[in-house]
Image 1 (cartoon, rainbow, N blue to C red):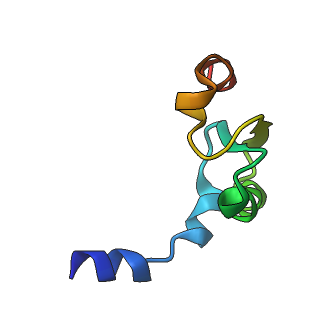
Image 2: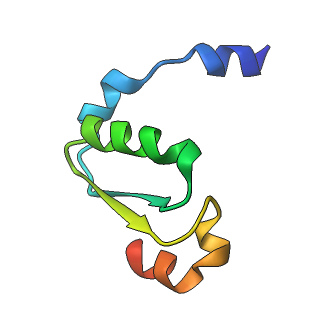
Image 3: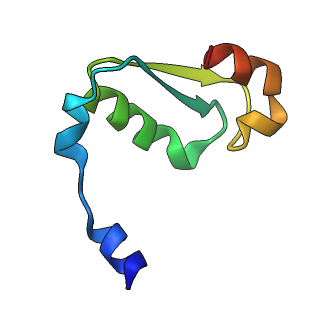
Length: 71
């Protein structure tokens, strides 16, 4: 299925080629995505990692801080 194909797709090596500045956000209480956010930041040289107070849905629970972080 398409879902199976997408789950097997590994593009991590391509992340080093992303040349645009990228902001990676995660919430201070979002334990599930903390490791993934840090790994993504290490793989993308042009990225910056920001931790906002909150959980998984920062755009809902911290809309102002979220908007400022992605400006």
